[in-house]
Amino acid sequence: MAVKELFAIDKKPIKGLLAVEWIALAYLLFTVLMMAFMWTKMQHAEPLLWGRFRFLTTTLALWAVYRMVPCRLTLFFRIAVQMIFLSWWYPDTYELNRNLPNLDHLFAAADQAVFGFQPALLFSEKMPWGWFSEIMCMSYVSYFPLMALVLIYYFLARYNEFRQAAFILLGSFFIYYVIFVLLPVTGPQYYYLAAGTDNIAAGTFPHLGDWFYSHYERMAPPGWTDGFFYHLLEAAHDAGERPTAAFPSSHVGITTVVTLLALHTRSRRLVATVLPFYVLMCFATVYIMAHYAIDVAGGLVTGAVFYFSLLFLWQRHQGSSR
Image (tube, one colour):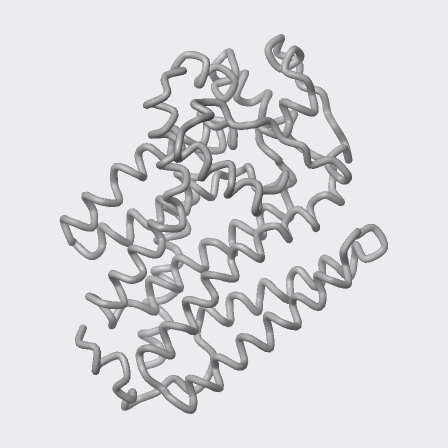
């Protein structure tokens, strides 16, 4: 894409909101309704509400900028800002689901029933090497860079499908966020610490009820603590991690979506870049104790389902609007 194409005025500018913006607004409405029902139990209700107002004004301001200068660059920024807001929406799932009974005991028990042990507890013990730890941490922190890589590729090389790719990716995220709000599962790094690793090792999984309403201490990730990517992982967790969003694994699910988007391009270089990280991601989420093994299976299935379902919806909508 030539630089001048970025600023060329669209011959047929989009008049209304983008599909990704409508999805974000639908999620905003869903969470506001949840907040209304939980208002008296919520700890930070007013700041969350004001945050939604700021999100709304930002979205409308970007729409207004695009209407004044309807070009590829302003369209890109509209979608890029929605992507950036994902990291803001994520902690909100904890603010909502902490008011519901925790369900980790069911998922830890499911792992035990399937494997006869806890993969998240034993994986790092069986593979303690520093180089392996760095590979696992590197693949886990590649999450957002992989998304950015694929979306930018669509923008530069397959612009006609850029909005479709963004719709599928953002749509998948918000479906996961709805699940996380309604299904309060924290994952091993939180549950093992709260329940006690002795209980976990013995195959005992206590029901913690509303423990995570006021507790968000987590275990440090296993691995080589002097590693560069280990420190990147810890910095990312310190910045935005919360006891939420364990099942299904959105890291695995979204990376599944990203991989399918890459395969759709038929670009060998893009696929060759994304695919190794995708495979490693499936193992890394368990290795660092972010997820139960069953969460990975859930991410694989839901990621594929969301991709093909949202692709079908996009194509059907585009066909009906012609």
